[in-house]
Image 1 (cartoon, rainbow, N blue to C red):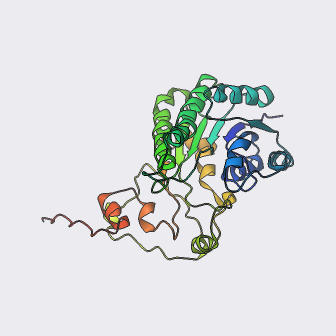
Image 2 (image 1 turned 180 degrees about the horizontal axis):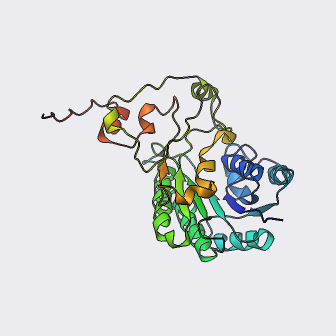
Image 3 (image 1 turned 180 degrees about the vertical axis):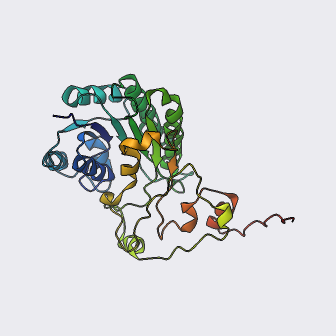
Length: 306
């Protein structure tokens, strides 16, 4: 009997969360799953604790024929990553894929963010990411070329300062891992899922994300080409509610032959196109895209000479 690969997914505290959706997709694909959750975080948030969520998620995953191991951990604690990996390996064996969906996310702006909140965001979103990746590398014991690191990020910073800033640090840490840990033959990539309905969306926002909106070509297509190192990614179908189960990019970066592709050294995947982000965010950020998103007039194009 072939051993199933093992995935460690952080931030799986609610059945409607992105982490839970990813854990389900992994289980459906034949991965054993260890997942973390932290009840005290949900207690502080407006949605509150979902009673029985951990047991329900565990039962759902095991019902798909795999082994699921829930681990409660506060990722603000620097010692948590070592304990998490020890618990996962004790039950499932070496971890093949590290998928980081955890976050601290409390809305606040430049004026009203407290030092305590700022520090906690960076402890959970940035420092824990570094420590998890470091622990993963230290314990790496799967075949060369099979290892995967995936981190979920966000570009939402306005009136969400500590969250957005700490996610920016997460991006840099993960992409650095792609090159620093390349001797292990693993890949490390960052995925921005965009707005996903995990219970926080208002009815108006949910409607806006569901309505079909034609995107059209960019105004300067020659300046907005997707970098050649990124393979084409399927857009989120318009007319569908953006739910965790509709995230398909994870399958791309976890597929067995991904390490041999031309993005093995790390990539940051932008949000899928949608009505709340606009067409420019499909393309790499350029000064034209930045000006357009900010509502500023486009810079003059330099004159061409024949």
